[in-house]
Image (cartoon, rainbow, N blue to C red; front, side, top):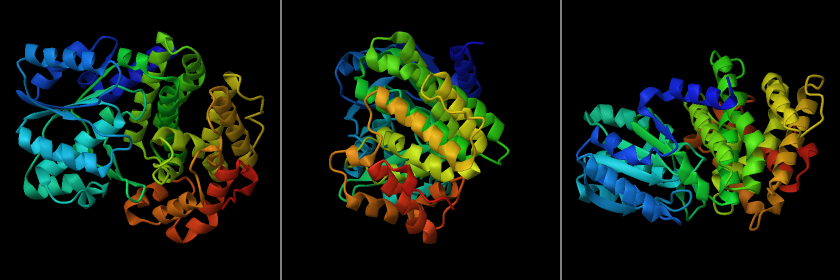
Length: 422
């Protein structure tokens, strides 16, 4: 079985027949919508070439007997709260019985959260955390409007997952809804839509996929789901490591594009089986200077060193993948604990260098001490407690300054020696 066949098999295992993915599937989006309703609200991104795709979606809806009640502009990067509120109000006015989102992770996340507000009302802060939407729906005997989520970027896998990330732009802090109730019932991803994505967006998205699988893999050590996650994560990380440099060099590499789409979808599978931790937690405090995927990618080598004594098996798996791709000569089977973590981190740095990606926060325009202070404060917020709990080396709020502080300082300077192990 090839890497591509393995990835497709895992995705079929994950979503069965409900997931429409691959090349040239967008014209069938109307069939997905017609299975859910007859009056659609379309929440859409705008990017070069998007009008042609949206015209195709309109035609597909019409051909399937679904009328378009309203077309709503999607969300900006990191899904600002203001965009969320605007979209929620438009959904109320549309009276649609099916929501169709077409965009990257921010617009799909906005559609998820906007439908929560449309159906349940209240303040969005009422739903940050785990399972609070499901609880509110049960208490009020309500259900969310069905959602056809059409992904356009190989990145967050928002079309497949229970997560909605929302940003308070005024404070620069992102928060998270985690709830099975917001998983889109009808996901769609036409891989050909990604062929126009620029190299920077492509790299950000692909490394976001690695972050999903990597962090879940680290956090699964010692749990019953470890073997399953290792299979998913290995397939995801291998596809990105082996194909991303080629796609950055040649954005028209269609085989490489398919590899990245499959990989990031597997990242979505990973975060539905387990949870992310350190890299994602810190990324929530860097939204004013970095895309989500880029922030996670910068931070994960440093967290790998911090977690290393507790995650030797997954580090060896990941290290072998990077070694087979020619990114390191380190003896991954002979190293242990922190030294193994450092070797894997260095291999991650080498991939970053080959695609022109930063390896430390100090290389990022606008980064300052206030970002470290913000990240340390956010890590103590009870609404983000699940990220601390998912760490393979769990931290309490009282341990944040002593141990997370040096991780952030190491990431600032690119100096792994600053990291303290518990």
